Length: 253
Length: 230
Image (cartoon, rainbow over all chains, first blue to last red; front, top):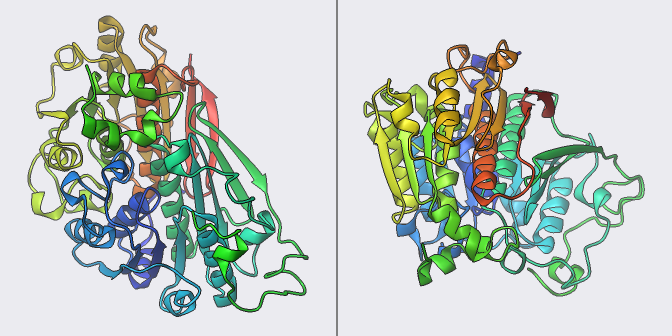
């Protein structure tokens, strides 16, 4: 209780590797915190370049980085903070074609993506590869965080069996997001990731944390694995990766 | 106080929110905040306040940056070890937001002088009793937050507050002079961003602030709970 990670735990963190899907709002604090905590190898997967509209929340990127690939900008900040960390820059889209190969090289996955197609893809790839995933999402002043550990709790599909109809959920660009929100959700995701890697047991597995920044209100919902889940249930019907853009109604945003 | 064309693009995700709008973004640009303490939690608060578009930030921390600070001080980097932490963080904040005025205070002491003229003081270090008196006296709001290992807490005192009985918050291990256990940085980040969030809400005048309540977080169990602060 109370103290920092033990020497043995820190050694485990040093041997661990994490794949970040997205180095934007959620990925920014996660990347900083994992590097600062001494995680040995961090993969940054993002094909976007830094835009002015990112800077109000994506603190991994500075004003001079506008126009630069996000993975390059992110790697520079992590090296300046923690020169020993190995950063793998992956300036590619995370797709059904490369997902399983990428996951095979990391211990844990952070889903910091901003669209449903990628969330289902990350989930299915993690279940099929038996890799733990820390999930977060943000919308205006609201956010959610949980941990999906195959075999020890639900997966994203147990919570959300089907994607929302295309066009029914506005994007960050359409709806807005308060800049501090991903800072909170992302820092929580980092803490959960560090506990999983260090071998601590009391994580958000099976618990969905729901946050409202406007009222500074936190609530928790217990979530269980669904026996009927098409990928982690008792009789899975999804046994390989599919076309997630089509699954989500043809829109990737 | 108006917004430039580039600022309208930079803050477009804010401006589109009904609770912010162009008017709120101008309030943030016109705001002056004293940020006392630039350790792990203060680093996170500082980065997010600068990114959010706060126009004037004064960083107050006289400690020299050590290698150990980098185990969580995400506003710092290795090339600045040995510099005062306020000066080190100012480098990152100016890189995030070159339009913001970032000042540095390195000397302990004149609390009333440090608070004078600010809309808000956000403190994870310093003499909280003196800060409360100074902020209450000058009409500034105050946000107090602290960490102890993977535990943290934060509370907000909106402008016009009566100096609370901070004794009620003692014994939590969160007072700057009490927190002898090094912070677990990611958990400190959570609490630092809570402080930044409360600061943004108080400047905008929106939502329900953490007034009269102390939000507590235990990173090891991922639990949040509240205690009353009178």
